[in-house]
Length: 580
DNA sequence: CTAACACCTG
DNA sequence: CAGGTGTTAG
Image (tube, rainbow, N blue to C red; front, side, top):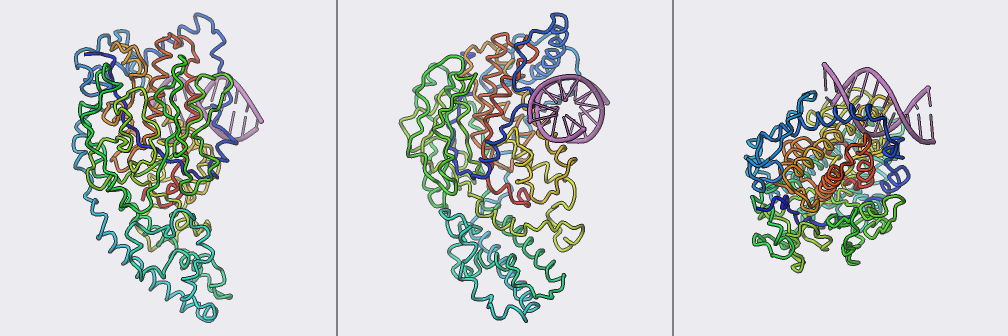
């Protein structure tokens, strides 16, 4: 058994890049600069003594962690490494400062396969719910209208429905006219009169308010809007989420002996189900940023890789083409070599509502048979189209709903009617934390402005902002610790080629991360995250292998690289009620 | 001075 | 995860 074959690369689904320009702007304008120390003092040589102490301490810490791992078999990839062969577990490891309670409890994962709360019935059921919600909404609407009667009779609200006036424009042209509609929504012909436009007007057009309008009406209106937003969101989420087979393990096939890593066609193929996906409404395809696989990092390896086939740059939904960083050949100052990394940006984010049917499918670009699925080093890049990507459901649409009431009406109580969502009226709640964690899959270094954009229901102030920034800092800490830990583990396991280190969904590392950021697995971790994770792991591996870790600041270069790999976050996250 | 980051602790 | 600390940079 070749110790080098670890974690084989999953055929990443293509990530879509439908990004929203807005985010782009923010990000680019204020790239996550690792704090102020962008210069990476690693060049400065600390005093020996000092350095030693420092390193010792850190190493001890990591080793402690690693040691913990030693207790659990097959740290990297289940099956790839024998339980017993973790050769050297640092004997020096003491110093259990952090209680890194790495679960390792695979027990938790076991139930995963079947664990989806049976929401797979995305079809009729959901449709019904939606229909119902619509009716209710209509009733409410009528009530409101009656209240406001005096004024808007003239406008004839009824009629405005068809004029998808204002909103239609906003409705993400290109993404389909039914922004908030679920796949099944279209069909409901009748319900159509109650289009987003109508709702939009109702909630936004001030003209509908009786001039002298009782404040209560205003409040009612907002509440209604909000409730509707949430309702729609939740329904959509049900449809979109439905992760029936996520996480199903690939089993030991997760990795493949190096020897065949490049060419042998995976036997386990089996899964391409474009059809299923095709059925989805607007599949949003994605793109993937640049393959991470061959990051030639220090080696200048092939340049083959970024094949971003032009076809891929489709203008998918919203995103102004401009952002398709796919081709980004950016050359970065110092890390010219790693430039490729930087250019990539993946945005996909999908809840892959996973292919309705065979969920357990391993992602393989079915349409691109030519690519060798196993290629650990070349993460299958862009195979375009990809029905693979199960429809991320460009929330773009949704966003318009939930955000309608941009009005920051979080004036204290008043959300009486809505029990469910814990939307905040102040401060951060668990829901926000959860959302932040999921966002971490896309962005490791969110700017405060980005956070503000994605947490519309939060009233930011210094404290809140700091707290959220702190969250991400903590997320990163955990992330990097894991990376270092696994990188060292790989080294001790005899891995020599960093390219062999790829984070797969069935790897221990992935589990650890997923457990931390996505407990419950109710979210499908985007492939781009796996790529970033793989890359991070490789970087740590290289650094440690090269003995760079003797430098007190050896991680900074890695941080810098990673900080540039944030992806765009799916629009749905902008919904204040997102994770529900 | 502040924001943001990393690192350490509890 | 929150606190605390030290650092950097604007």
